[in-house]
Structures are given as structure tokens and as C-alpha cells.
Length: 454
Image 1 (tube, rainbow, N blue to C red):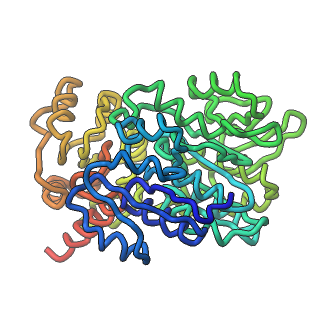
Image 2: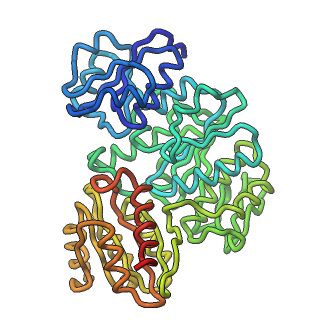
Image 3: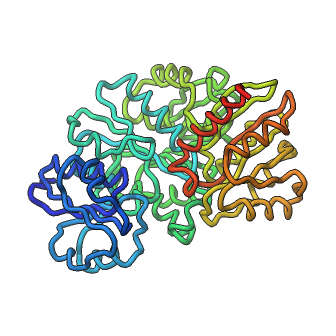
């Protein structure tokens, strides 16, 4: 698409907004940045963009709608607020930065969404692609904005992208050659308000796909199985619980894949460095997508066996006085945190709590299975989680509130005995106390390592 001379409103002055503005400038467009924070340092935004663009802060100027050609939304900005509704009513296209980058970029797309497992799957898939193809970009929620790389791509490029429901909410022409939805569980209801809307946004990942593409879906997820049954896109199911006639599945310790006529052994899970049934499912998704892209099974197997996992996802930190410390800051919702506690094989001092996404914590508490000996709670949700834990039968005397993560780490260290574990697996987002889950995980690791000097 030719953006030359087009005036594009960039809604939000954070990392995504800055990346979108830079891309628009390089593409010849005229970006105008808007942010609702009245105290925004507009000059700082210009400095980060590297150009003297127009920056508007505070109340939204409705009159700007008469002069812009499109709007690019930052993922953190809700799409049901009056300014966005006003633009849509005026017929102005409203895109995510993923849509913007797709319109500028080249090559083919492999896109992954889902409530949990996205980061591990995308990281592993990126490695599988890089070990076989010369031009591969790994972008999205995983760290590097798609907008940062789109202009430098050639027609040979493969882009592996982690997509959030926020980004998919405002796509238009975005078209992956292979897509995947890892699972669907309750999340981000503070933004989407209903599960139906959250699911709709996730399922948009396959909206523009054709019969030449595939969509990889979790057969054991009833929402996704129903979606697959009505999908116009060829579906590849994966399962960790049953043998499939067609798709990819776990058979004992072996991951096998079949196109309906021929079955191949992909990898023995005993040879993997990453552990847990959820990680075996991540391997299945990555393998199915890489295979569709043309990566041979032998190359897929080598990459899977060499993959060490990702930071902040049940990440071993260190052992101090016989106590092992694990960083699962990526456990930003109850379903992800369930995977964290299930991975523990010793009595555990658990740190939980954070930003309130209006989720239920019952399933998480009920998954403790007697492993949690001490429950340290922080953040906006600490009282709600404590009430849920007590109602579910967790001993009140084993729950403690703390003002910050550092206090919680020290308290867990005092309660832990040799042979125990201390696990940060919050079941909540990091916002309010930290910029993101990565910062929260990094600070946890710092506080843990500081214990060695006490």
C-alpha cells in the first residue's frame, strides 16, 4: 500500500505508537500522535520517534477526523471508547499496528495467538524457521514490534508473529500462511467485557486465510474444536490426550504427525529440554506450522531438542540453602499459573497477585493440590485472591500480604526449608507495579540473587 503523503493518526504514545510512527515516516506518511494523558511530555515522544511530528495530548480533538486517512491503534488502547467510535462513524479505517506493518511488509506470515503458550510457541517456531530459511523475523508481543522490521523485508521473508487479542481486534487484510490458536481460557475481560468478544477477537486470526493456508487448533479445547468444525480454512488439530487420524498428537512419549495417509515421528519428548504437557503442546503447534512452511521433520526435531525454553516461564533462577527459586512471571492469568504450580515437584512458597483483570481465581487455587505451604500476595488483587483461597479451603494462617515483590521474596525465603521451592507465578498482569511481566520477572531474579548477600 502506498502511504505517501497520507495523514495517519497514531493512537497512543507508548512503544507501539512510537514504532508505528517511525514506520509511517519511512513509508512517506504524515503521522500525528495522540495520547489521552494530559501530562504527556510531547517533546519526549518526538525525541523517541526521532522527528518533529505533531503530538496531541489530553482531550481528543474530534475535528481531526476530517483530515486523517486512517488511525493506527496501540494495543493498550480500548476500541470501544468515544474517540474510536467517532472515527468509525466517520468512516475512518481503524487498524492495529500489526495491520499497518502487514500492509508495508513482504513475504509470508506465521501467526500464533491463544490465551497461553504463545511466547514459547513463537520462540520455538522462530528457531525452527531460522535454522532452515535465510530471512526470518520473530516479532509481536514477544518483544520486537512488527513495525520495526516490515520495511526491510524481501519477498523471501518469513515473519513469525505473536498476536494478542488486542492486536487482532483491529486487523483488516492481515493474512497468515499458517495461523494457530493454542487455547482459549478466561482473560482480558476488563478489556473485552465478555468471553464471546474475547473469543471473537482471537478467532479473527484466520479471517483472511484461504484454502492454501492452515489453522492449527487445540482439539481438546471445546471452543476451538467448534471453531474448527465451521472453519473454511484447512484445520490441523493437535492433541496431548488422544491419537488423531489426521493432525499432530502425543502418543506415549512420542509426538507424531499425519496428513491422513502417512504418519511420521516428529520427536520423542524424552529428548526435549522443556518439560510439562503444556510445553509438549507448544512443540506440536510449532512443528505443524514449520512443516506447513516447508521445514523438513529432521530439522524440526533437531531444533526442538536443542530448545531451552524462554525466560519468565517456569524459569529456574538459582538454589540457595537447598531452596530452588523459579520465575514464572509470564503466568499472567490463572490458567497459565496453574501450569506453573503443576510443574513444581516439592513443597512451594508461592508469590501471587497483581493487576485486576476481573478474572476468577478458583481454578488456580484448586490446582494447588497440597503443594503450596505459604502464599505471599501482592498487588491490587491480593484481598480477592485471599478470599478465594480461604473459601476453597486454603489455610488462612498460611496467607500473608505484602506491599511489594521484594518483601514477598524475603518472606518466602524465611519460610522455605531445604527441599522447598519458591515460585513467582502471579496469575495476574504486572501493570500498576511494573511496566510488564519481563520487568517483574527480572526484579524477582534480582531480589532472589540479593538473598545470597544477606
